[in-house]
Image 1 (cartoon, rainbow, N blue to C red):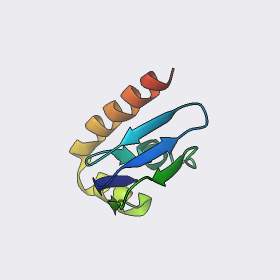
Image 2 (cartoon, one colour):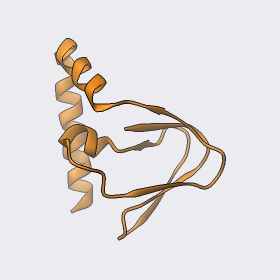
Image 3 (cartoon, helix red, strand yellow):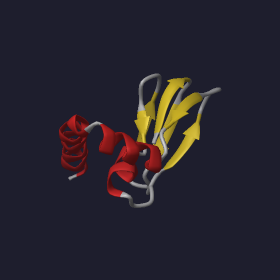
Length: 83
């Protein structure tokens, strides 16, 4: 998962394009589901982003079980938004 900390990116799913700037998140569905990402991310300007790898995320979820509910809610809201 990437968290955009600076710059401007375009997320292209093949069906629609979404612009993201500071605070935007890319790849959260892949992080949560374990499936490969289905979108391309193109930096439109010089961009910096923080990376959260799946194994680190899984360790966080084990150590902090209270994160499970908000992350599940995030996934459900994203899935609902794609329908």
